[in-house]
Image 1: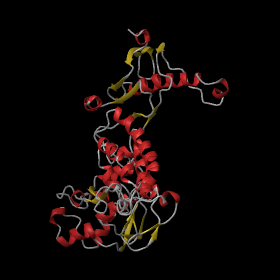
Image 2: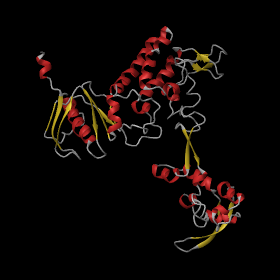
Image 3: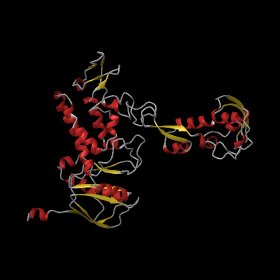
Image 4: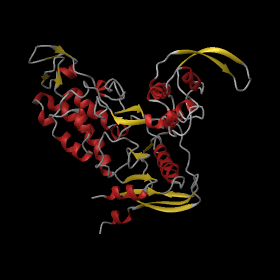
Length: 412
């Protein structure tokens, strides 16, 4: 038997861990395994992973550097623990925000999309302004114009930023979100047994001055009868009436002061649209979203990309189509990219593709090969913390949804 392997530690040993919600815990964590930490919110998953394992691993890494180097680096605090044994010194983790942005996807969160966009920018067949395609060329990397083989038009290939849906490549209609929000008229008057005076028109109650009902009355709408009794013309004024100005006697409910002023009519639909255009944070969105419905963007088909960003073709498909593949499928597809190109482009292609494959392998090792790059970060199995550059001996994954996520780690 190999004595060296026999004496080699097979687990990290933690004794007396006291970080945040952890109360003097003792735990052994296997090495050379994918390890899942599961528990309800606040149970101490991140405290164990970051407060003990990461803190101790980074501290040991810094201690291995020279005194001269350490003086110029932020010193890591010692973990609040009695003893930690056999933590790999090169452990590195990165924590993601708990609430992903509306444009966050698996591709943007893992930065795989950056490599894929570079592939499409440098290696793809690009479309000229007249709609013809030019073959892949080294001129793109050299910053030289391409010449259309059909019409002779000179043009420049798009850069990687011009293929990004959170930058210059965003669909103009949905602003790179893949969805469009429109007013759902069925939500504007939730209870038609109420009169407008009683608050039947919900947006006027929560998003706009209630004096809109006074302007509606001036425009010929009966505001003192149940909404269901209004004529079609009256209902149309409420939902779609023109933005006319009306002189209204307005009384301040607090001070009692009164005066006549000119006010512009905001119909119920425009009241919501106006509020949506001014939303700046999550709190503001919550006030508006109950009056909205979401649909797939009709211009980009939910891909988030503009027509120009969807134009380049690599191995016969667009960037949008590549992003719909699972990571497993995409890895195999990328492996065939260099051979699909002219011989003089293959060295560059191999370098770009190798960068993608390296990052993809780490994620595949974590059991995430079933995800596609276009998957929204908040959908299904959310990964609030991801291991990015952990050494091969130690991969960690923690989540508050153990039943779904842990099964996926061990799948296959």
